[in-house]
Amino acid sequence: MEATNDMTVTEWWETAHKNQDKKWLTGSTVRSYLDFFKAYEIYAKAEIVLEIGCGMGRATQQMACNDSKDVTVMDISVIALAQIMSIARMFNSKGHMYLPTDYFDLAISHLVAQHMCDADLYAQMRSVIRSLTASGVFLLQFADAKGRPPSYTIAHEKGGGVLRTPAEVGERVEAFGGEVVETVERKINSNVTWWGLHIMRS
Ligand SMILES: C[S@@+](CC[C@H](N)C(=O)[O-])C[C@H]1O[C@@H](n2cnc3c(N)ncnc32)[C@H](O)[C@@H]1O
Image (cartoon, rainbow, N blue to C red; front, side, top):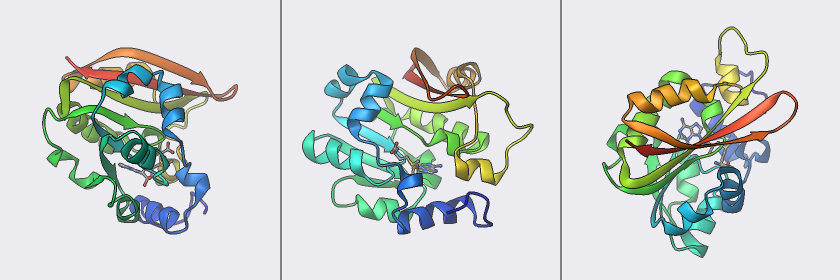
């Protein structure tokens, strides 16, 4: 599936889920989430978990079925949500403002932010921070790279090419009543870096 075709972002994700397109859905395990975020202890303590963007539902399955977490999935795709409906609660990402307040021990967003424009990501982040308990943690991964484009298009969203720095995202976190309590980093190659923030309510 080419990232530059003329589907909307939502249609594009629905097509990826319909085709079980591993290139775009990734299929990360819960272990790969926790390795990247260095968050094994946080995960062990969490009972109520929000997964933002479930991809093939592999980590969802592990969290809900193997680890007995109470999992809610928030995804842009109704096909993605349908695939996890027997093991987790479903939340359409367009309704992020209806997430419950003071509810989740843990929220995880991995390989999603780089597919979102600023308006969508920052509105979603505000709702997710509000939905954390006082001791809850929001694990947010995003990407940065050398040579940013002058502006972003829908093709960057589909292709995962929307880039951000920890300073840019951290500024928004504070504006939304949160604080960054830890930052992790992984160099993917000589050009691309993934960042992971541990965010709590301030
Ligand atoms: C690249 S996959 C990553 C899946 C999984 N988190 C992983 O790391 O393997 C992106 C997932 O995010 C979902 N997604 C895309 N845009 C989203 C949004 N604005 N809000 C929530 N989920 C979104 C897609 O439908 C897909 O399930």
